Structures are given as structure tokens and as C-alpha cells.
Length: 166
Image 1 (cartoon, rainbow, N blue to C red):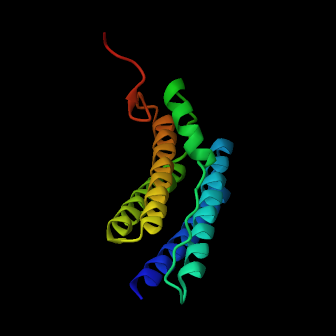
Image 2 (image 1 turned 90 degrees about the vertical axis):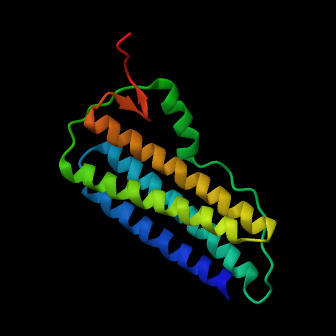
């Protein structure tokens, strides 16, 4: 069944992301970077749990569980970060940037995967779940992008210039 295969693939991807984020947390020197990776890992665990519950629900019944997925800590943090536009230049090493860049690419890929799955779904609950997971992955992307901007000190915070020439 294609739907089950897609869910199993998503579960595997979430497990791998969770493992990778914990490895990054262990390797990252900066405390706020460690905390960010731990929070991302916890979010990925939540995503995995949602997907596993759906897989259990549809196995043999082809019936989707419809539940509201609350905003994650990261999703709640992103709007606050946009409001503050605070520059945070930590002087972290290249390995931290490499980990963040990898995480950024993986979050974008996860977002795109969930959007594609949402398009393929005919069941409203399935479509809603995939769209919600895509939103959560987009929030991860934004928080990682903000972390990269802060480390690089490039004058941008969440894509907004920190200063203007006016």
C-alpha cells in the first residue's frame, strides 16, 4: 500500500533526523546551539509519534486519525525572534555551521516531502496532517536559518536586514 509506504518512509526520516540532531547537540560547543538541536530532536520525536499513530490507525482499516497538532516550542519561538531581530554573534566554529547547513537542507527536504504527500492524499485528515507537518518543518528551517545568520553575523536575522542604509 502506497500510503503505508509513505508513512513508514516519513517515520524513518524523522528517526534519522532525531538521531542526527542529538549527534549535533553533542558535538556543538555553543550552549544555545546545543539547546536548539535538542529541541529540534524532540520535535522530530513528536513528528515520528504522530506518524506512527497514523500508521497504526490505517493498518488494515484504511482510516485516518484526525487530531489537532498543537504548535511546537519552535513554532511559538519563530514569531518572537522576528520581532526582536537581535544580532547574536557567537563566534562558533565551522563545524557548527556545517551541522546547521546540513540541518537546513534536511528541513527543507522534509517540508517538500510533506507538501508532496499532502497533494497526493484524498483523505482530508491525511492531507491536514501532512500540511501541518510541513508547517512544523518550515518553522525548523526558519529557526536554523536564524541560528546561521547569528553565527555568521551577516547583518540578517530571519531573512530581515538588521540595519538599513537610510
